[in-house]
Length: 424
Ligand SMILES: C[S@@+](CC[C@H](N)C(=O)[O-])C[C@H]1O[C@@H](n2cnc3c(N)ncnc32)[C@H](O)[C@@H]1O
Image: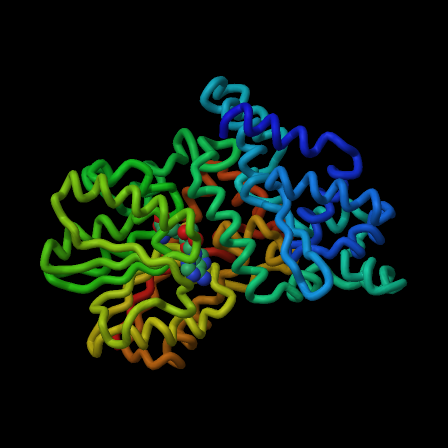
């Protein structure tokens, strides 16, 4: 982000009223609020509010959408993350020692929105709904955090996930303070630690590896020349490009991702891939893995790396995978899974959700979903290496989760990386 742009955005927030409106939208209203609700919650008269809302919309920090006779206002979360990244990015590249100190002091991984549970506490335990609907704030205060979180609809979950991965894809998070991992925990080291070999990684387009994987599905896929491969939640194309080289010119690899910014990044990487390999056998499609933009019985192998846990409807994902696979086709997936249920306070953390932990399900539940979708031969292999490395490298998210576990609880008792193989 250019300094001039950042200055314009900060200028839009230089009023107590606008800052309060923006914070309200960010903190409590992923679905947005209409002007009347904002006015009521903040006690700002509607006549004054409309000027402030116009300024926020004009800056791009807030979007507006007609809804019958009302207008709904939503915070532009990716842009907010970008201005935070603008402030913090240099602390790593310019002054790595100091950056490390900031990270330790904050105890937060700023890649992600702060956990909502913390924000509820900060505001005395009330939620927007309780404030809006009545005097039932007290009842809401007593409701456990997990029940509040369970009210998120599937679409809200997807929006949270999308916003966070959009911010990662646009790359303003130049290092440890707000985006990519750094030092020992950088994308290259991380990929090596889950089984990718250094030579393969060096051949990849720059920016394809964002350190977002938790296993190596390409390795277990044993791909053959000429196969059609599909990668669910392909990100910047990390596994797509590797698979493309293995299936060669006679094969084809399709990457699907619901985040437009990821698809844009992958398509940019594709130019580099073509230059380097001379291959034109990969493509990227925008879409949700619950509704794959892929024909029935057209794929030999389905890959996915640390994505299915993010889906709010995993049963539907597996049904879609079964639909698109040819008879005899193979699933070759790495994902995060649970060895035992997570405590509610961890499940309710947004950071844990978008960090591929809170949405993970039990290993045996994965088996049940695969069976229900129609798969017959199923091999599930838990792998402890990924979680172990995250702990050893003092990854901020894993540290935060570790601290939220009950006394004596170990991360590795709960979370594992899982290799999933199954055949249609
Ligand atoms: C943890 S990243 C993994 C990216 C990539 N597989 C890699 O290893 O680099 C998760 C990716 O899945 C995408 N994603 C999450 N939920 C999705 C869904 N329901 N449908 C499609 N894509 C999804 C995100 O946009 C993001 O790019």
